[in-house]
Image 1 (cartoon, helix red, strand yellow):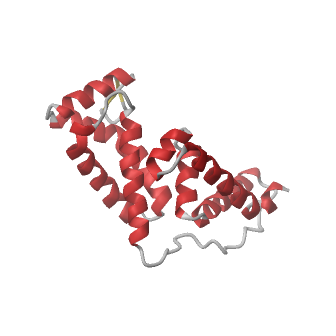
Image 2 (image 1 turned 90 degrees about the vertical axis):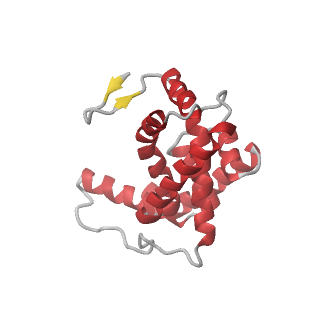
Length: 191
């Protein structure tokens, strides 16, 4: 095990994570606390990319850990705990999106690209990053979730299919459609 600069214990391998999961399944709340400490930042990043709202993200992440704790007896240790946890979190985030009556735009997708400082590589990189973030935010929830799980969380098609439902082939199609939409949205940056 390693120790993070904040003093938090970090697992050095999958075996340590599985030990924490086993102990958690046996009722060891401290072990589950270590799992929360380790996975919370990644889980929150995933949920935020789906919801685009930090307040909702914190609520959904917290509820995800509560549900995961209650569902620990049904967790099959042959699969990765992270995939199982992210599946719960992503489904809860998608449920939250479905509950919304309208989709608030936290990022103004119509915002014009900055014209000043385009010769500065740092400014240009920041401009492109912001444009990508706006473009991803405009994707429909199912395409956005598939894209985020694939590109940011590096999940395989089968894992993504378990999260969003459907088959690996349907995930492949969603990713194709998401990339096409992003390409069209970002064409001016590709030239």
